[in-house]
Image (tube, rainbow, N blue to C red; front, side):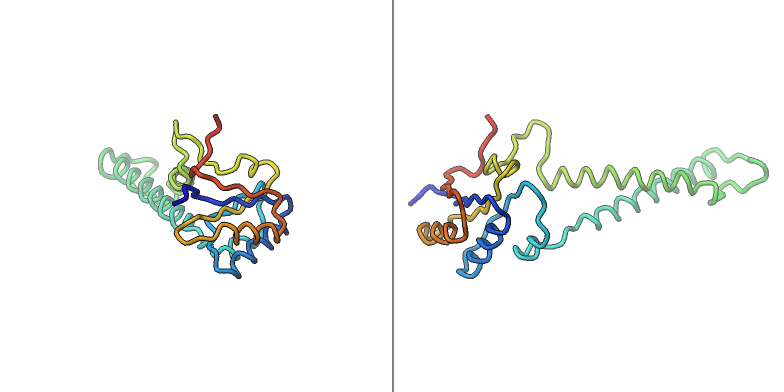
Length: 178
């Protein structure tokens, strides 16, 4: 039993990497992930990445902010301490629209940042999860999970044919910065 967990194919050119993805998918080899130093349009569709659910989180956080603002203003101005201000009703909705908008945006912004940190495991004190340090500088990396019954020689030859300049057999899940 080999203790190789991932095979990493490093490319210099994004077109070569896209060709490598095509070659691996033609041979029914599942790709764990792809790491690039810049966004590449169309790679999500090629890898079958699902659409993000972040807009749903944004909507829920925005509605929470709206409900919080309106309920707080209703409670303070109509229930807890009703005041007669210029003969207006205690809960005059047009007067509360700016504050409602601001709290909606505030809750949405903080909720989105929190959801992003939670989803990507960006917690204070957590070591970064990086497979290849050069993926953020100048290399395009395809990571293939080495599960049971994989043929490392076949994967290596497919990556070399696609234009990989380096192939690494990674025995650890992540590399630390130290």
